[in-house]
Image (cartoon, rainbow, N blue to C red; front, side, top):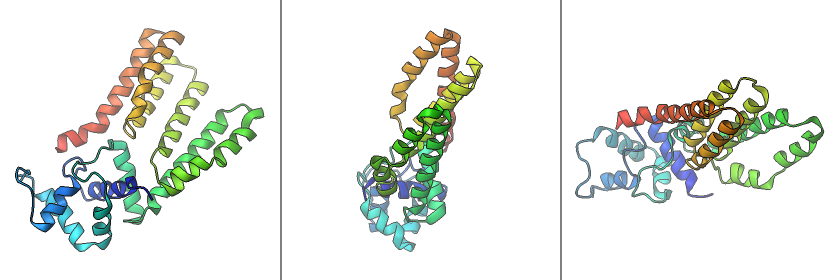
Length: 231
């Protein structure tokens, strides 16, 4: 099991208890428990930190997870949509990875189903074999519990919208919103923003490309806004 999953669990528990995962680094919670909180730490925000300290003191699963997190000196790096997935996994099975595994596996196969729907009938069998028997997917999702499985669902939705919708402006809005959610899950899909923008401009118009970019930006802003306000 990779160290990322321990951060997923910690972030999910943090958010589930009403604390922003962007506020306190795990090392700060360790130091607060041991009474060695470093000089210069923010002592004006103690309520949220006390919640996390009490969780660790009272729950063996929390203590075990906290000791296994990597890069403890920084708060989470994962975007808001990922945080919601982590919180859902924690709500399902607590400090076990099973909840996250279930969510990621369902997302992967839901995305795979959408991809099959958008695939030409004569290519569906091969596509199903590639999606269902891909050893990388099994390793990364079921074993390593990587959240990239969620991106399969989002980009499958983009494929479906592009193929099934007939109104360019509607495609732009749906695609922009789904890319925004993908960016809110893993930051690297932002690299596709200029690619999609250029595609909309070439296929339709600059106005359609602008609508796509606007939908993406508004989705990202809506995802981060609650956390920015909270902090």
